[in-house]
Image 1 (cartoon, rainbow, N blue to C red):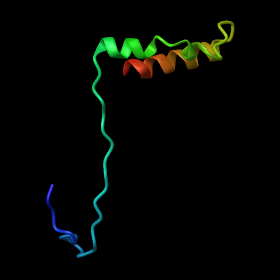
Image 2 (cartoon, helix red, strand yellow; image 1 turned 135 degrees about the vertical axis):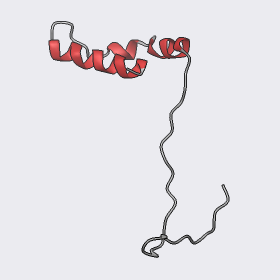
Image 3 (cartoon, rainbow, N blue to C red; image 1 turned 45 degrees about the vertical axis):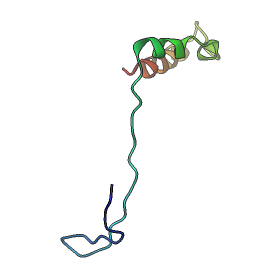
Image 4 (cartoon, helix red, strand yellow; image 1 turned 60 degrees about the vertical axis):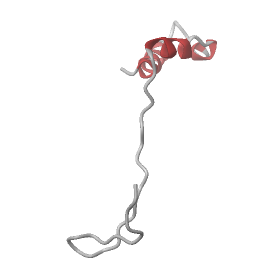
Length: 66
């Protein structure tokens, strides 16, 4: 990605700064399931507390990419 060192805004002439954007890592379903096969995911979960179980479900959903 070659670009001029000093770039100006075409509208106002102000200096522009290049920023690094986020990126995503693509994993196979098997790799995602292997990552969830960890006892630490159940740490602090109280099966008698609906809020605790809901927090665990959200965490599992984010691990699965949902």
